[in-house]
Structures are given as C-alpha cells and as structure tokens.
Amino acid sequence: MLSRPAPAAAARAVRRLFFHAANTPQAQAHRAELALRHGDVRFEEAELVVCLGGDGTMLEALHRTLGRDVPVYGMNCGSVGFLMNPYREEDLPGRLARAQAVDLHPLRMHAVTRGGSVEEAIALNEVSLLRQQRQSAKIRITVDGRVRLEELICDGVLVCTPAGSTAYNLSAHGPIVPLSANLLPLTPISAFRPRRWRGALLPSTAELVFDVLEADKRPVAAVADFTEVRDVASVAVSEDRSVKTTILFDPEQGLSERIVAEQFTA
Image 1 (spheres, rainbow, N blue to C red):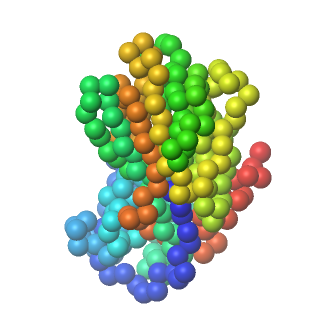
Image 2 (cartoon, one colour):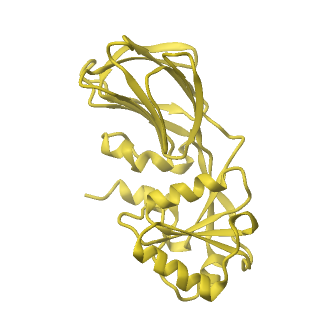
Image 3 (spheres, one colour):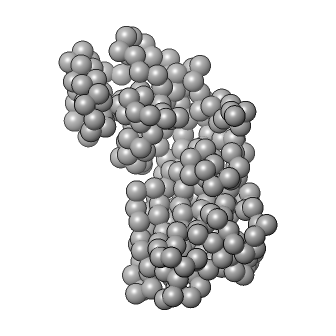
C-alpha cells in the first residue's frame, strides 16, 4: 500500500458525524458523551467518521470507509493507539477542521485454496502467510513473474504497506518504511532456511505470488487484516490504487512524523 499525505487539511467544519467506538465500557461512554454534544448520524449519512478505541478499531473504521469519500479521525481509547490522536472532548469541531489528511491504498490478496476456491480480501496493514500446524511452511516467492526464492522454510512470510510497517512487520524484525518511499516490505517470520535471509524491499508496483509447497503436509493460512483463508495453495498480492481511505491527524501528530520517530524509539 502506498500512503501519501493529502495536500490539504480538512478545510471545513463537518456537520454530520458518525461515531465508531470499540466495544469497551470506556469507548462506549465516550461515544455517548460525544454523540450528545455533536449529534450522531447513520454511517451511510456521515461526512466524517470519528473512531474511538485503539488501532484495531481504527482498522475496522478504515475498512468500512474504503472506496468512500469519508475521512476517519481517531481518538485513542485503547492501548497502543499508533493510528490515533489523543482523546480530548474539548473543541472537537476545531480539531477536525485543522486535521491533516493522509490517503491510504490497500493491498489486495487473491488466494486460491487447495480445493480450488478463490477468495479475495484487502489489507491496510499486511498480508501474511502462516503455518497452520506444527511443521514449518515451505513457500516459493515470485516477484513480477520471476522466481526470487525457490523455497523459504519458515513459520510464515508477510508483505505490508508503509503504514503497516510499524505493526506485525516490525514485530517480525522487518524495516519501517516512510509513507513517501513507494516501497513494500517483504519480511520472513522465523525463517529456518535460508537462515540469513532477512527479507526485501520491493517497489509499490510489485506483484507477488506465494506458492505453498507440500501443501498437503504443511498447510498454510493467508491473512489479510481481518480476513483469514485456510489451506491455501497460492496467494497473489499487489497494491490496489483503485481504492483508498483517508485518515486524519492533528497537525502535530502526523503519521509521517510518527513513522520516522518510531525508528528512533528504544
């Protein structure tokens, strides 16, 4: 996924808000208070979505707005909150008017199962292939029609967006990628052979195919954000620039700055 800062901030006060809240007592209480203050319309009528929760709740809201011209502004009521702004009830209309926008383009996963069925899904963070049972997976990796790795023996492998490079990818020791880099990190998960392979940085235009070897003996699942497809035989992944979603940040809390700062966090 390529993520680029939009050229302008949200230029006007938004009148029709929809509050998307996590199913926790704290987030639901905040939702009730904010809806009382500012009104709350149906999702289909909203000009802007205010998300209350953590990064998982933000991903849910972003998926709901994919393909629609409805930005999402998050306030942290969860744990990490990397994609969220600080929670404050004061001056919400002013914060929305001053917020800066970032457009995010997802990855599209095309998965073929061992039984021959085809499933598609999109991911704003990453597409990952993971072993389903005790034995390691064996995966062949093809990039733009050329086999780049004949056999990766591993617990799994993932390809992520720049915005998602600070999530599962970082936990798997993959590189953090700035939004403007036009790159997709490809990162192994507990690679056994080749043991020294640390992954690759690919152009955002790359088309990847993962073929599962010995799939009957070493079954593999493919996961695109919230969608899991089990017993896959092959998985194709590429960036889908035909759709986008927009996330809003306070001017001093921009996503580009957070991604850079994360690289200097101990």
